[in-house]
Length: 358
Ligand code: AMP
Image 1 (tube, rainbow, N blue to C red):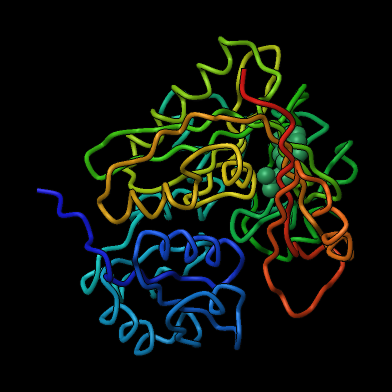
Image 2: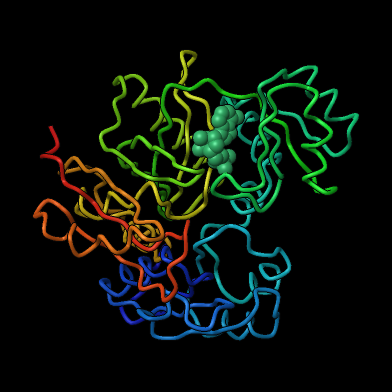
């Protein structure tokens, strides 16, 4: 039997960034306490949480103490060391579970998992040596992208190859790290689906959003995405398929390429996702509350959209425009309270309401 976590219970969050902060705010609305575990001294999430444990993720005694002090553990980023998870999994439930983390921590495992479900991805091959890269280029062709298998985000750890002559210099940049070569997908749009699965296996998806990147970082998400009804339905069915296969509990972000051959899966993130921030002002229950509800054994909220929204990230200096943007009655401003503003750093975002959902 599923016992919903009672009001006043404590949710432990691994990671103290803006996603952890917005999860903590959503948890507070439902009467939960949050306890953040992060290596930074004053991470953005700690400012809105009841407690912070400041320690490295591989500090096993510290993470075990944290696990004993909370009722359920979740995370806001996927690169948590396996040793840390092993040390806490018998102490406290972790949602989403290990299977989702294992799949999303390694691009090769992820692609094998997705294609194993019958889903389509870019053509890919594992690459460690120069010979393997030459062989992969032979089958996949160019243009192609060489990506590190682990710890890549926001386009980091990626090199584009326009011809096979660039192979040696591209591989040098990986300094012996395991990599994957992906064929370049000629997509017309990048979209994402934010989907949630509850402990009772119920699934709720938010409408797909269309994403635009600048300098490898998400710049905007527009909802609704300009998509045929057939593709929109495909996106949602495919998301459900992934969540069920992982026996998933929580919110997942699924990034897709739209191509003439249909939808290709780029990557999955076992957590709330930047491209789901629009739900804060476009839906009654946003992705953050949806995640907290799922991991707390609560019923999921209705994912339907009441408004059309454009989410714009405020990156680096764009933070200084926040007060001016707030003059627009159609704009909701969300700032992360980060002390240091750096080029390329996500400082906040706005959700601009562009009309009522049709
Ligand atoms: P990723 O970190 O894998 O999500 O890649 C970051 C961005 O690079 C994506 O959002 C795409 O815009 C682009 N990209 C990644 N992989 C491919 C690919 N195989 N073909 C074309 N563009 C890609």
